[in-house]
Length: 418
Length: 185
Image: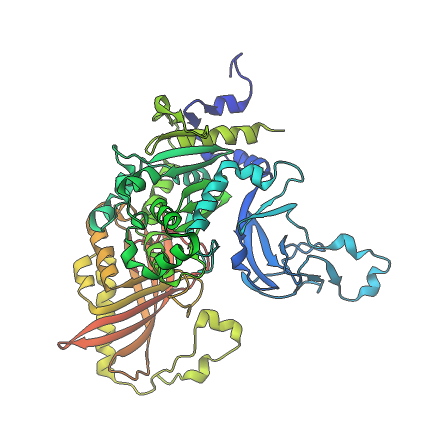
């Protein structure tokens, strides 16, 4: 804190070094809720979770619950579950189908567009304008290929500007479906984690850990995942800016040149799916899609597309988070969908072969920060070998810390903003 | 053992957590009750002390081990479950634990579970169907955790010995966010 001190962020976030308090300080967490979670575009849910009119499901923006609703007109609404009267919840079901929400406290009733329709004993409100007494809403709502995002900021970049180059990853995912659409229909596993959300965020594109954290399952299961993250891997990490990062294994899959190798299987084992893909895209394009496979992309701050499943990261407090995970389903492709579910159930959630151990690492990291020396975490791996790809995006070796550095760069920009 | 289906019927809102109607066995066979209870106590002990091989030996070749999420009678062929293991995946789970590098079980959880409230269900086949409740105290590096579940078994006699053909563990809080569950539940 000498004469060079400009802001606390100069102190906390240095090139390749971040201060431990960023993961445990309650005041910083509160600041993140305002400057990140209630500002940027946050992934809420997928349109396929509420297929019918009047369907609703409880989601969140950071620690705040949000009702994602398909209203009576078929439009997506992101409503806030707080009765404007005294703050009670107007809905305590996690999901369901209803056109109206009634607060149990004094029977105020709202349509699923959020408008106040009625209150009990209305004579007491003579002359009151109901139009100002509707449910709160997420300030801005936008979708990209069925993925619904919300932002509590009235102004700022559009969703597509925010996603930028990461749109390619969502497109790549949807291309793996013969109908071009995915569905999120299997319900979520909810994994409580005694660690700061940023440990989860950073781990999603950390290609350095799998060989060690997951060696137990790699050694007993027939898995080729380990090859993607070895010392000799040709897979790369990429940063799209705005905190979005990916591990791109396509160089490895293209070297193998075998359709469905990305999914640990072969075209012969999924004849119906392959036939559907050929019919939808033509054989040449379908073959390329099935070689490249599905993306491994972390969309800042909370949507992780992990090839065959999605994770939604929810911060609860500085020291606690929830990982929501579920299988991706390719609309209209039942033979691959069962495998997508089975493989997901084996891998993720509290009992998963992979995620139980990742989560063990997050929790040990968090406890480690109680030890106050050294003060900083070290994120310089591979900083000498970062380079630009043909599109100008920063890329690095699949085991390098570049994704973390890029996340922190964006984080700092958001936290420094007024 | 005088419970019957009528006693658990109630409003639909309960079904998600109590489960679909099950038919309880009214007749009581003390010898079978004792044998089944001892068998499940033994299973509990093998789980508590992480005797992985002995636990794996309890299963039939066509076994199914199911820990649903988000309710009691969900469709495991459509919905995510915490565990939905066929026999080969049970074996894989055990092989992973035995590597010694399953970090969430290294060191292993220290466990003691209490299994109680045994009730037999009517069974059309030869399988013995039994329900019971379990409470598990776990302590590990993170801290202390209480787990509570309603368990349902199909037991089968193979070469004179009881085996588990089906075990379903309905965690009472399976709709909430729960901590890592990597011991054998």
